[in-house]
Image (cartoon, rainbow, N blue to C red; front, side, top):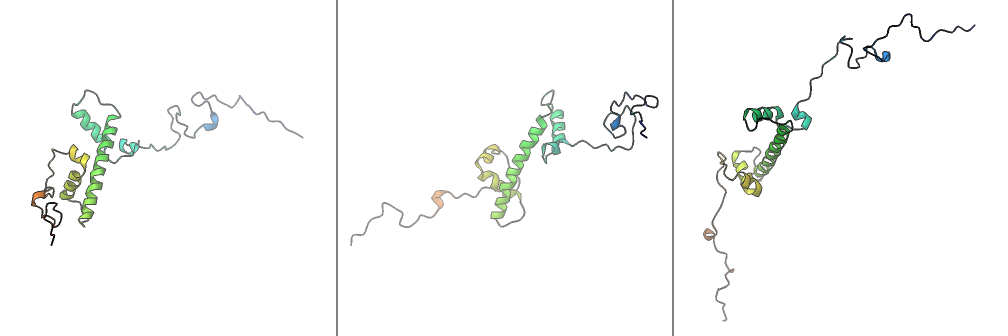
Length: 162
């Protein structure tokens, strides 16, 4: 004996216009017609710094750009770009200062190491030419006239023919 059951029964079904796909009903498919099906966690949006993969604060730089009145409007990409440039410059100076500290057999970077790093690098020295680094000291320099003359390097020395 075979019993056929109808696959579609209009008597007990309701048409849900809010969710035209009844297979996803109650599964949190996004828009649920204003009815919450259960506790859904709201994920906090990623910040600008983490989106761009930066350590420098994109939001703070954006706030400073807006407050500084550099322009009437500030684009969305401007603070990200500026944060990336500042982070690159800081990383470059820190790397060179770390090398200077290691050359002096120190494990801590002090202003003297930053001064040596900046002044020994041609591009950074040009960029920070008019900048005074507090407690940085001066570059070691001895004028050539004050250096002792090397023996035997003179071309005008009289030759002994004896």
